Image 1 (cartoon, helix red, strand yellow):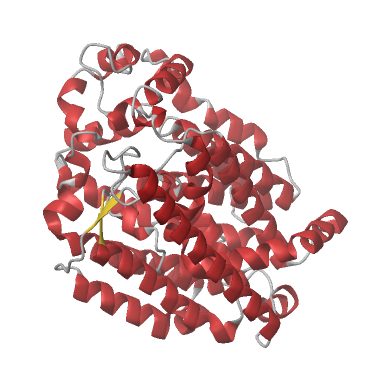
Image 2: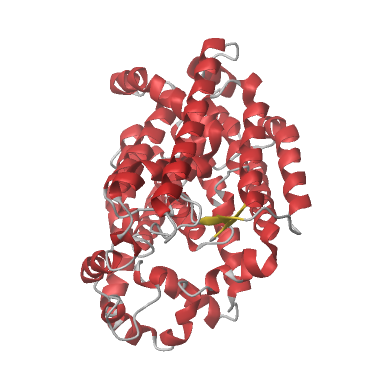
Length: 471
């Protein structure tokens, strides 16, 4: 981040030039239409999904398009979740405007943790936090098989396929071993078990909020970052950050992007060090999830928006470190990826119809981003043609650069969707993408912001209390 708390631009002036007017009533009507269409998409995905499921659970989802089941309930986290939501809706926009920048970053991270913890604890400590990563398909089930890490990595590909001896659980087989090794290392330092693993994912995952704020401030301006802050805090996707490893993945990709933005704009004293750090995290990213290689599109957009290729040498130097370490320890990423594709179609994916999930995945994403973000994305797409013209002519307005960033993330998400390798569970799998989509809420008019924040919080609370999610 920058070396002081002073804005690098004039927030009020740039917001006035780059963001929609507060009295844009026709724009608000279109926002509401977009939100209504998103609700219809969700309703269609639920209805069609239940029909496809039939009595034999063909989709392997009890409440499609989400990996969840209908189970209205309250829990120990309910009062805290309601209190956090009310506090952020009432005070969040004002505090986001007034707090010193560094204080805002820390406060946003802390508030996001409070929101995520409270939502997780609606299902109780055992079901909501400690038991999540110890389930039969999860990473902690294989900790004892990594007593010798190099040996486990050398033999990793031999246990991916369903018919292989001692085949890995679904999530271990479905990802490179970076996540598993992370939990092994936590265990080695005395932080073993589901409770510590869940706390790690929530704490690290919530930091993605601060990373996105840094990215938006660096590439666009501080005013837009401050406007987005309350929406990032009350992210509906927090339902799945607490507690799944994908929350951890989201934080790694978010900080990769933030450091690269700082390096490209030379907003830090040592931009080369920031670029190197971004490269190191980028290398780790592709060893956490095969699909996160799509973040190369976002990294390219960051360099284009900053109009700089200076960070590339240190970034690329850092990016080879983690792959080199895993290769020297005996893990073959490409072999594992091809075996994963085969394993993927040995399981539920072979029964899950592409024709349904290619659009139902988007309905699942509505749950993770909320209706406010749907409205923000509508404004992003409406502004896209003028933003592209502005960026081509010499950098554009701050909001144009925000639009460019969000469009790059949308492009990566669409590529993930069309690949067919994310049939279902995208409310969790796409957290690294959806956390950036929340920045589009900075384009919403100021006089509607609390209403949209309330809709975000209400949606997350309904999901968490009416459904028993798998994560």
